[in-house]
Amino acid sequence: MIDPRDLAHCEEAIRHGSLSFHAASRLLPTKVRDPALALYAFCRLADDAVDLQPHKAQAVLSLRDRLELAYQSRPLNAPADRAFAAMVADFEMPRALPEALLEGLAWDALGRRYATESELFDYCARVAAAVGAMMCVLMRVRCPDALARACDLGVAMQLTNIARDVGEDAMEGRLYLPTEWLAEAGLTPEQFLENPRPTKAIRQMVRRLLVQADRLYARSEAGVSGLPRAVRPGIFAARYIYAGIGEQVQKAGYDSFTTRAHTSKSQKIGWLGLSVLRSGATMVMPRSARLYAKPLEEVQFLVDAAARRPLQARSRPEAFINALAQLEMHSRRQKAALITGAETLS
Image (tube, rainbow, N blue to C red; front, side, top):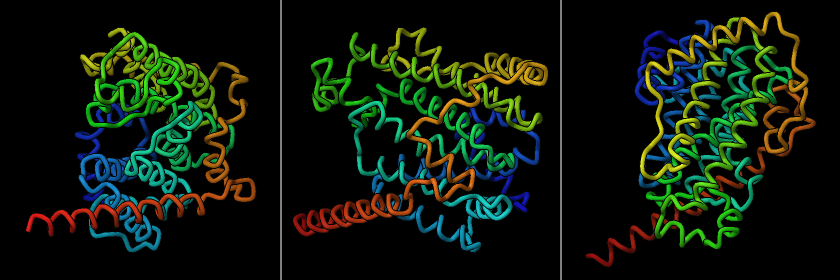
């Protein structure tokens, strides 16, 4: 069981680090909400470790070591690590799922870019759909169809985040727009990053991201009926709150440079109420055929891992090890450059 003091620390981290998840989580029953807070606190820690640290490669490698300790039931002596290790033990969390998240963070640390929409979905699968699959495990749901729809929701949320942050990311030298889309507009990544502006072409790309997100939000709804009744309001809330961010980007003319889209407290309260109503409707409405739609190809390995279908799963350990090997080489180059720079200055 998670120590209450560690859990309180996790909730405080989420309260400040992810207002949208904190609002949606309030509709989850305690037996799901508590481990979910532990999961999201560790994910928040992982994301911040890469996003806010200058030596990103070393930060991911450190997270790999922390994950290893958690799975050995001897976590780092920190509240988020202890809570995460307890959650892993209580729910027999498949290791491939948090490893997929770390692989996505490794791609961030390497400054990886994505040529096609499918490659971008590969990234979204790791940094967001993996969390959706882990949430299903916390609900004791291992049905492949429900898992596929949870992954749809995760990818949709990440596409929304990317659409909201195109301008902010560009200012930091980060690029998630598929480079094929830029090429269609006559732009190279370097040209865009040198002078990031909300041109008509860029705003159309933001719109394309949100169109895909809306398609996946719609598909994800079918999976809610496959979840325990008590968790349905919280999942609907997450769907509406994140989709609401996309609506704000749309209202701004798909300009995520001039302003950063956000939702108000009153809007969140409205969506929470709508979520309760929608969850009640799932008890009397027939299941949608969308529940049985094939998973996105990019998330299939997550569905297989969470559903305990290792024979069908792609070779995740090898891919994860390769990503970390690239990171270690990158980290060594960074250290060598720092040493060379110091020697030059002296």
